[in-house]
Length: 585
View 1: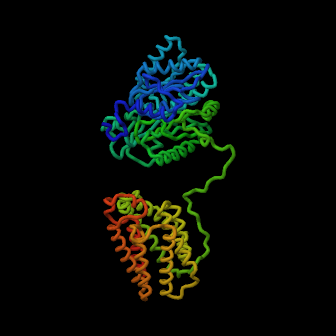
View 2: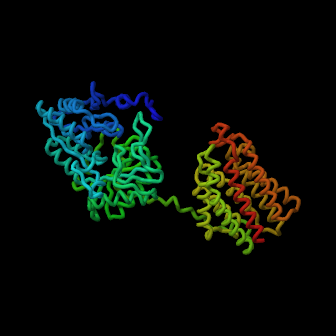
View 3: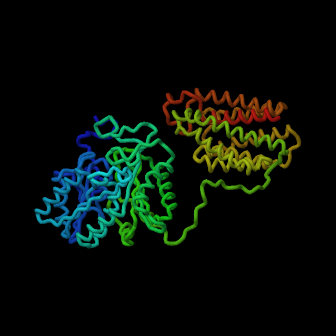
């Protein structure tokens, strides 16, 4: 049984994978009676590179077979070295097409060194020119001070060797020179990684590394083995510093030096997390005064579904290495693209997305008295604090039928509101609503940001038409009209209506009750109390509703057993506003 992996048979999953690779990339071929992947094309008098290792590290190693990189790659079983007979088969095929000889690029693991070594002995016996380079770029063992008779492990720094040595080989550099360059690349590279979750071998049910929840393994290997040490979970910037600092101590990079960087996703890290890591890595290396001239990020040498990342830094001691990195390659997994190369001319710097656009103060609409403006300011702050306090509850309500982030999204708006409060035009409610619309759109994003943006923007447009407010009754009537216009603003651009299990199921009845109370001459607080009661009832009613719009509309009804998270959020901020108004007036 495959045990929650998308496989037919764990015993033949490697062969199935190689057949799938060949189907996806017809320029590659799997040699009969071996797990060797080679190029179909002829080569000539140049040197051919051969590498390999256990399966489970895809796209390593077959994904780097292509022009200007590997001529062949040999795969073993999952996390096991390929047998020497398969290596010999690949070596013979490459030697028949590359008359300049064969360079074996070997990851520094005992099985790989022995099997590739044996195959090289057989090849030399047959008259093939063979050179070998062992890649041992892992620097975590150096940090431990323990050392090992086998040396450091081979990590994703292998890929720098494939690209630079492979390109020079394709250009006709003799075998011994290619081997010398490959060795220099190895000596100029250091790699270290971390894992926050281990992998499970096909056919097994137990993780390879017993990593407790909330723990992180620093210096983890690519076979799920333990690394340098286990540390508590921490923010990305702290964890990544703990793997970059040892790399710096190993390479001793000086200010002004140039480097290329590989960020290797170990297989289970989301793309979002991967690029958060890239940001942190970039900032940290630049802080050393070191220039990153190329940075590549992708799953390159994975460890099945291990959730983690490795960083490999190459000191560019030879200017020609950069040219080799930039040379095109047909290898399907090489991450270099034209967009990897910085533009030669200066480009306009992008405005920080975190900076909320400051709307010009146009003093739109009526102006509130200072005392009332201060009450409104306090009410906004209290509502923001309550939204933050209820964020987890809203996320829980949203988790069964949405993407589980309703509370987090509203909390982001709330935190931004608190930060921007000194700059908000609370004396001019129309202008304030426009500022809130902008905040919601930028900070919340997505559907929620658009909905709240429409609500506040349309209400602002209506309120800005008011020149002056004669008395309290007039103020309440204008607020009711603006609220109604805000709801119309949402419904002009959304299919959501009352009864569809959305925030409108709280907002609409609240607005209706507020309008009804105002029309009867009820005082402001009593009208607002009626609105909050209606919002609560509307929210409660959503527990019995079937969702007709949004993500929840695609979800089985069994997941819709509680109230709608968006409607609950409306109740939170309306009730909070009411409490402050009652306390301050």
